[in-house]
View (spheres, rainbow, N blue to C red):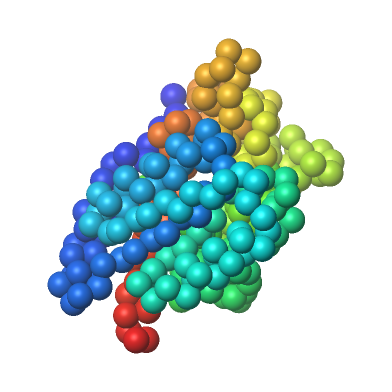
Length: 289
């Protein structure tokens, strides 16, 4: 049976470190402050923002959710981001996605200053990763950062490993492919137009599913030696309404060496990464002030 890569013990360990770092900043008169812009009442988004606020406050940081009506105009939306971005008391800012259709065309990552871009979507932060940074200078996209943290915690060295990432989004697939390449893995970035997907994943040491299709990956996509490490990024609901990932966990768990659960895996690592980015941003802005 596979080793289950649960987030709880990792989050507990790192949260203790973050509490200490936050306390040091507060002792110097700086309270790390995150503002979240939430448009509408999309149920998963409401839940995600509440969870993020709870975690930030748990480490001693300040977090405020700024709620906007779903029918908010583009002008007001952009002005709101600019107002928060220019607030010197705010160290981190992100817009909860997805946005309503009327605003979905806006590249919000470029509206947030790179030094407050705790989501890691700004072009400056992405370019630093593209240039070889693994988080030393850049604020790295939260889900990719969380996956790397999880692998390192479990002493899974990706050097020389073959990695198949399924999904090429700017939120996960693309920045993750750059991070893993920086760590000397050999990465194949797969997507909806990829041919012979099963052949690619069967030949991979690590398979990372980030496509948003419930239980898409089953044992047929994995190597017969049962040594594949499976990272499930997906958050979906199956036919019975139960939360699940992009991986058919029950079908795969006895055909791989390691696997992340859903829930309890990558999702919690993403929130941890957001907190790490907030503390990093607050520390950097404090030095520059």
